[in-house]
Image (cartoon, helix red, strand yellow):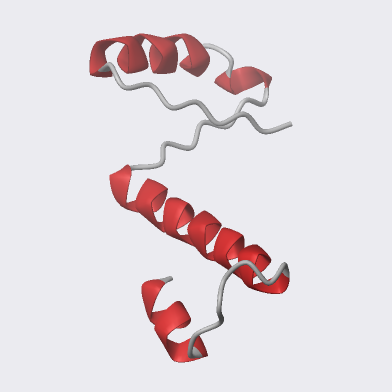
Length: 71
């Protein structure tokens, strides 16, 4: 199972990470995504939404290179 948690408050984030570290020996793997990773994921999700809108005919398609450049 994977769980993604977005914690805006840095102090609380550090406390949650500290707590999760105690479960590392039980097989919990902690992966911290920094802002750049989050931006990439957000842009990818936006791209998928755009594809769905084009597929539904709610948005005109555009050159694929423009789309790929944004990803």
